[in-house]
Length: 331
Image 1: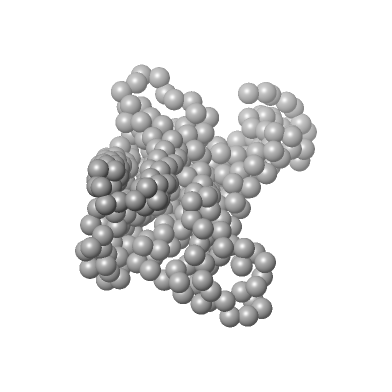
Image 2 (image 1 turned 120 degrees about the horizontal axis):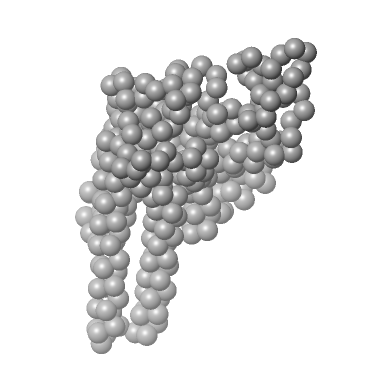
């Protein structure tokens, strides 16, 4: 902490963007390069997240070919990720930049509630998508019956209600009572341990089990084709290509998800067992890593789903404003 004297006032330089005048924090009149770069970088993450998920939402709502139960789950996920970009990113950016100096108690509660609720909604929607994929791959004959519009609607409603109960429950139960000067992030780590079990660990175990089952079923189907004499080489090759794409998709989706979320939630579990407090910079970096999953999901769609690439081209080019393309064939 660097001490300076300005007009008989004690000025403490505690942050690249803020200064303290007798315990009153004000934005510095001469922000450093690191301050500007921090604002630009974090603001860009929020903008990319909002734009990417907004494209997914517009695509599914506008194009009638995409009005299917499985895409409704993708739509719900995109809405959760969009709200993360609109609400959680700015709150997290304010904390990262200001170290939670303003309205500490209320600020931390609002930030924690939005963060937990929307992040949990995103994870639970991913879990529901894995359940949908399980029925599509492992039980294709019963898929339309098991995954109809009514059941999908109940699944989506359940995701959001559960996420809201967990997020609001943390505040009502008084788990997030710590003030920022006492490192509200550290307090939140301990207070949200039970919540993270329901919002992360249980859904992850479910998703891993489901995707493992899907992988084993696809492998079994591939072996059956190889040993069936009536199958042609062409059909075997086609199925092999499909199997490789399905496996790669599952690997990327789960790999990106686990890469973004696991470090932060492992820290939450093991933090209470350690004697030394984890530096706030480390915690904030891991928190931004979790939030980046909401930014990366649209890129996963763009890479693996041709319908999304086709829809984005029509939207960005402005063609949907020049005529009726709602019935366009995207794939």
